[in-house]
Image (cartoon, rainbow, N blue to C red; front, side):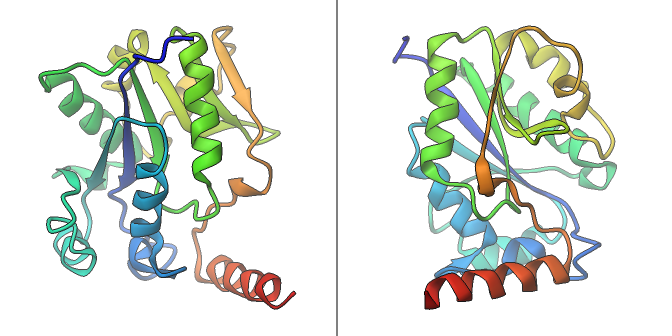
Amino acid sequence: MNENLHIVVLIMAAGASRRMKGIKQLLPWKNSNFLLETIRTVKESNADSVYVVLGANAETIMSECNLQEKDTKIFLNPNWSLGLGNSIAFGVKKLIESSSLPDGILICLADQPLLSTTYLDSLISNFKKDSSKIIATNYKNRVGVPALFPKLLYPKLVLLEGDQGAKELLNVSYDEMVQLDPGLQSIDIDTKLEYNQLIQETNLKNED
C-alpha cells in the first residue's frame, strides 16, 4: 500500500436543484446544512485536500455557509448550466493546472447526506493498494459516485459534458475498477418529498 499518494476531493455543488425548487445545498441537516456537512465529512477523511465546485446560487451559498471564512477552497464554474459533466470537467481542469498534480481525484456529491467518513476512507484505502484502478460505488444496477479516479483517466474526465456526470466512464466494461458497497449510505436527495422522508426517518431513529 502506498501511503504517500496525494488524494484530492472534488465536492460537486454547482447545480440549480430544479427538482427541489430551492437551494438543495442549503437544506438543513444535522447541525448545519447539506453542503457544510458534506465538507465536514470529507475533511475528516484521509484525503489531503478538499475543493468545492459551485455554480448556481454561488454567492448565496458562499455567504450562508461562510465558506471563505472557513478557508474552504472553491472553484466557480461559469458554465454550470451545461450539466454535472461540465462541472466535473471544469474542476478536474483546475486541479490539473495546479502546481501539484494529485495522484487521485475523489468525486463526491453534496446531496448524499448519509455518506460517512469511514466509507470515504475505504475508497481511499483501496486506491492506495492500486492507484491504477477506479474505486467506485456499487448501486446494484449501476456504478456511481463517490468514485476515486486515477491519473490515467484525467484526460477523459476533462472531456465530460452534459447531465450524466461521470457515468459514461463508470458504467462501461472497464476491467480496472473496484466496486464498493455503500449499504444504506447511497441515498441521494433530489426532491422535497425525498428530503422530508429523510428527515422523518432520521427523527424516528433518534427516538428509538
